[in-house]
Image 1 (tube, helix red, strand yellow):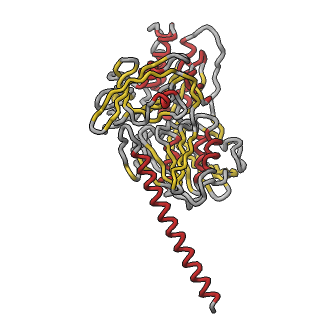
Image 2 (tube, helix red, strand yellow):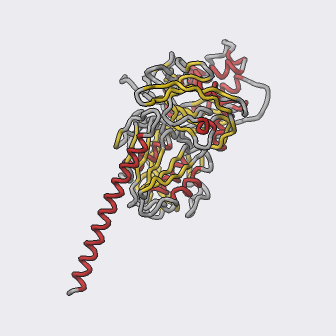
Image 3 (cartoon, rainbow, N blue to C red):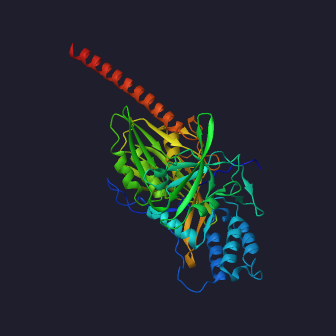
Length: 487
């Protein structure tokens, strides 16, 4: 098998849930009111009772059999069930919460899909905080500066990379309204220690657990920042606080160029705030859309935001598990409608048309999209749809390559599982494992935002070219009018 390179980006203060399975629901009107699609959160018995490991294990197994994309073949599904149904009957693992969580995680990993997530009660609570748009932390996101080689555990599933000198961790984003930014931490700073303990040998989850804590308590972050020819370590003490995630940021970069940063597709306020920000972009200007470090989230929101940026074209193609087969769906835009067409495994074609959100950014406005190794899932849908339809150009580094989506299933005892159920292809192009390769590739430099500078430069060049063509078009139009009137 060819060597794969795994990219992993986790917000410092929570574990993200990527990608959701969807079904057609209400239509949009001209504003943001309700999603064109509604998330299918598969129902499950969440009643509180004395912990029963066998009951929890069996529920997870049944949901995997029903939904997992790797179990669409009846013969393979039967063989997998035979192996796992009674695997822990006599081991004692299911007699405790810790043992049950471990057994379920091993079972889930056996399917070899790197974006399946089984979350225990604490991880589920953290994820719910993320969806609400605020949490206790210091307000920053982290990721690998380089791309670690993928490694697998004994059941063949990818495991989290270990931080070392070849795979250092840097700050992808320091939220301007958060404690980390106020204390002086900046995008590009390399994290070398937490509370005096070096991060070498840790995983991102290890760092998460060390940085998290109670509101009002302190954590010390040691960074390495390039200062000229020197790399100087700096330890900064930060007080943990309740942080409201700045889902959308808007800046005027000057010269007619607007900057909009979208931090995730998880917060429910995202689409409405994105609409507000995009309305500030001048009709004669250019847009830099920053999706760096954006781990994705809700596909509803990606489809909504794509409508704000695109006048026409295919947004995404979905290949979903459908019983023992695969159904292929596409979501496309025309002038006034959004079309969702599903080709079922039995050959049935089911097209549906819905009223769409009117595009906010006119198609003649240049769009430049910033991406990096932390851009995943819904971010890749937006970046890919704009790139592959030639609506926008991309700058930065290759994205995560998460071309699959999940159903989100609440479980008893506060647990949650995300089961990979479909593959998505922005504008019909395959990105799983590959990611989106930027049109202009720029490697991040610690301590400064050289990628944004390159994006701004490209946006300015595109805007100048557009304005030059517009002026020439007006000259030719006036010439033809004068010729007609002189006859």
